[in-house]
Each structure stands twice: as C-alpha cells, then as structure tokens.
Length: 614
Image 1 (cartoon, rainbow, N blue to C red):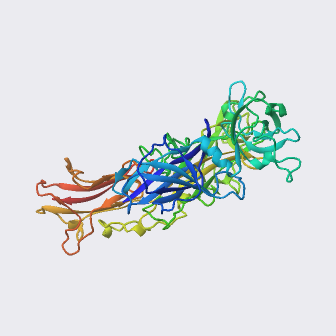
Image 2: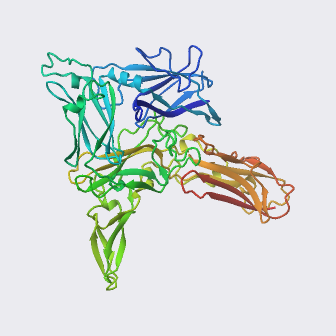
Image 3: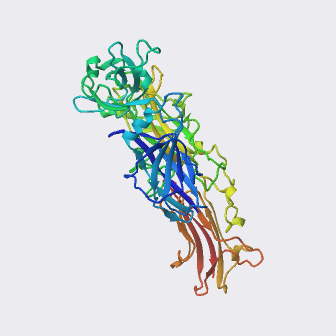
C-alpha cells in the first residue's frame, strides 16, 4: 500500500508575513523513540547533519509551498513520522555564497490517514515559527524586510510602487535593497548582512558599532516620489538596530487608489486562485484539483481566466499589457506514469499563445442616428505579440453605425470609452494537451469490451502551473505585477469505454428467449472519472439496478479512481464478464446501460447501451 502525505509548508517572517518553503527538501523518517507532537507543539531545531537512517520518503517543495510525499508501504504501516527539512539553498534570490547546507528537525507527527482502494492519504500543513526561521535565515547571511505600502487616508494598497530601503549610518548610508509592491501593496526585500556591515574602510574594516541596520525608506510610483523618509526616520524608536526580520507598514498621502487601478488575476472559471493551491480554504488542492472537497474538477476545452488589467499604469499613465505563462510538471520516475501525480515542477514557463476569442470589455460610441451605443471588444490569438503579451489599449474596434444600413466605423479603445468585463484570457486547453498523443488512438474496440486497460494505454494525469504577468507596454521592462497558480489539471482525453454481452458476441441480433443468465462485458477507464454504473431497463423502468450491478464512484482524495472492467470475453465458454440472472424477467425488449461521467468541469456524462430481447 502506498501512503501519500500532502500539504503546504510555509515560514512566518512576522505576524502577517509568510513565505513558501520553495525548493526545500522534505524528508520523512521512521521514528526511533516514542512520542508524537501536534503542529502547534512542534519545536524545530537545527542539526548539523542529515539523519543517518534512510528516509521513508522525500520530495521537493514546489514554488507555492505545496508538496506531495509518497511513502512505500514496505516497512511502514501508517505510524508516526519524524520530519526533517534539508536546506541546501534558502528560498531567496540571494544568500552568502559560501554558506553550507543546513538541516532542520521539525519534529514528530502522526498523520490521520484516510484509506481507499489505491492507498492511504493524509494532509499535513506546517508553518515554521518566525523566531526560528529568521534566525535560521541569518545563518545564510539573509536579512529580511517585509512590509506594505498603503494610502494614509483609507489604508488602500498601493501596487506597482518601487520601495528602496536604506541603513542610516553616521558616515554613509547603505542602500540595502529594492522591491516593487504587488496588488495588495506588499513587498519583500532580501539583503545580506554584509550590505550594512560595510564601512568606508571596507574591506579592511568591515564592522559597524551596532549589530543591525537603522532603517528608512523611499517609495516611487510612476517616476514620482510618493514617500521620502530621511536618516532621522532611521533613528526613530523601532527603526534602530533592527533584527534579521523587520516588518513595517508604510503609508503615503500623495496617492488615491481605486480597485480598478489594481491588476489582479482572480479566477479560473468560477474558482478563486487565492488562497494558494493547497492552503486551507483554497479552491485548489496542492495537486491542482478545483473544489477538492467536492467536485475535484479538472479543466478541458475553453478555460476562462478572470481578473483585471487596467488600460494604464497607475502613476505613469503608460499603457499596460499582460500575458499568461504555462509550464508542465513531470515525473520523478517513469514518464507518463498513470499511477502517479507528476511532482517535478516545470523547468520553464512559456508564454501561452493558445488564446480563444475572449470578450474583455465594451467600447462606447455614438451611431449614425446619434444614439449612444456599446460594442464588444474581443481579443484572440491574432492580438498576441510573439512573446505572448496582450495590449488592449489602442485596439481598433469596428462598430456598426446602422445609418446608412451596413455602415461601420472604427473606435480605438481608450480610458474614456472602455468598460472592462471580468474575463482576461480564454485558454484553449486542447492546444495545450495536444502536445501529447493519445495513449490509445481510435479508442477502445468493441472486441476489447470487458478487458482491463493495460498501464501503457492509460492516459496519465497532466498537471500544469500558470503565471499571470503585467508590464508597462511603453518601457517593456520587467513585470510590475505577477501572480501564480502553482497547480492545475488540464485534460481533454476521451474515456475508454465499451459495453457488450457475451450472448451477442457472434450475433448482435440474437434473441435471448429461454436464456437464464446473461454476461456483461464492460470497460470504462479515465484518469478523472467521477462515477460509473451499469443497469438494465425496459419500457417499464429499471429491472436490474446498480448495486448489485457493477458501479464505482470517486471519493474525496481518491485521485486514482479510474473506473473498472467486468472481465474479458471468454472465446471458449462465452461465459466471461459479469453474470446476471434474468430468469425471472418477463418477455420484453431490454437495454443494458453503462453510464459514466468524468470530473472534467462541465461534463454532462455519457451512456452506452446494448439492446436484447428476452
């Protein structure tokens, strides 16, 4: 039996600032001594080496902090686990280059395993306490400033502002780092201890009189300063000699922000992408399924991506453009393994060029009768630049004038005439998934009804990551805003399904009068099946129901439920498959029905039927 532990691993920098433990290795060991702790009781500690015993399982945490750790049932029976983190490189863009790898003993947990036919699964989320994490990062030379930039009047976030942090020195000020605020006004600055320990005499003398920096900040929005602190602010109480983690709320009284000024990506179809996939309350599981406690949906065909991108950058009035990037997960062992969820994070993220026609808004105009009108603004793949960027501002829209009949005019999208909808981009998932040829082209032949689908012919789970980026279209520089969904499942594969009767194999019109038992040959297989059932009906209704006839159903977390098969045709006895006693059924016309539905969002289900007379 396989045990699968999944969840979200984060670390606290302060009360309202957290970061995912991206790229860190998670290991689980069999415990040596007794005792189990809860997440609230766990007390992480540093250790100088890895645990000497072989781990039961290990995995790398993905960029969102989500992880999936598989444990082979050989030698493990669902007991307590000792958890260790291996930090070869901390989840930051910089660190002291000569800092050695370090290990963290998190503690002992007892997962609450839920059992299914495919194995056992449990969830464990953990957040490393800020006091431990900040001291631990300092071992790599990493110091952190985490903050928010808000309006002073109403505490509205100010996105897209450039924050600079300085250390107020007696002899010279040190520039510590720079960051750009996101849609919530949040920023994170990483700097090295060596940045504020430098002196005018460095490297001969590289020591300051106090341990930590004295911080002050500036903020610039669209080239205009909106916050200018000075050395004296760095001498204020609470700003002097700060520690490895410092959290601050800054405010500006020079900015008025409204919600339509904020770029943001909000939804995939009707599912919010925040909190991050796998986090408590998220609409996506760590694996990438939408509504994990209910539908556990995957997506196919057209997939609307919804949110907002203003026409212009707040503060500069330059036009904005946006794009989506996509990357596909891989397997750590056998490629395309249908018995595993791919867990190797995408090696790269590529622009999404598969854009279906999407109505992103309306333009207003006055028609030939002098009547005020609205016309739709649609974008498609022809509007994309070669690197996937999409600019709506300045797009020319042909509008009907009605007078004279058939007359048209051109309206150019601008702030004074544009009303945005909630749709940003309709992704053509068929173009994405068509990168992989079907495992069984042409589907399942009728002759194979009843057979179990071999592993090599089963479609695997296709898992992807998506990123949304917004940039200034005039400067075409680095993104001023980005957001990500660490995991989502796309699937456009057809179910492999067939239904037959042994008694009809040689003659599909064979009357079954006098037959007391029929033999059902059914096969249904799909990587995201919701349920299937077989029943027998006549004009009076259901004669043989499921159960006891074959049936199966997905339950929360049972991501490897694929359907079933009734056994192959027996060419000698013609008694293969599932026997059904029909001796008490009255003479009539009957229909054997195999019904199934996938978890692909919007799927309405399919029914296959075979008719016979008795």
